[in-house]
Amino acid sequence: GFVSKDKKTIQGFVLATTDMQKMFKQVFLKRALPLGLKILPVLIKNPAIILKILETFTYSDKESKTKTKAELIVIAVDREFRNQNIGSNLLLTTDREFVKRGIKEYKVTVISNNLGAIKFYMRCGFKFAYQFSLYKKDWSLLTKKL
Image 1: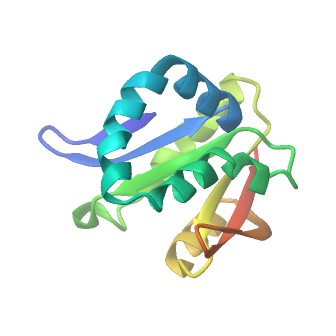
Image 2: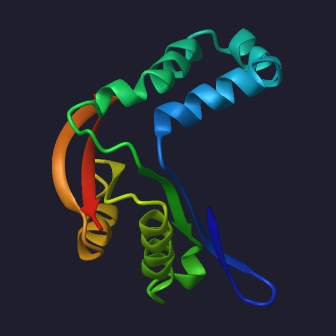
């Protein structure tokens, strides 16, 4: 992950992984008990959320049409700092790190009706690959060759 900040303020951040399935597995194996204890009160209040949790852990199956394992998990820029190339620079930093690690392509998923995000990713070199359904919503998967 990388953070963009000035002297006082975090302007934005990005988080990526070289392998989402491996990351999920590591988190589950190393943090199952603490995560379970934190999730338990939520499940007691809202048992239906278990379906979303299970769907989250099968998320990688939805992306199985592409062999690309590396993934941009999240990028965010504070509204006050948008349109200042912070998001683009965070992506460039992510690109450079992936190249250092031998990654030649990575992916990102975005809710399909989030046209602003899709336009941003396409301006930054991503290409539309396909759509899939998750959490009862349509998602777009985009990939970027490095």
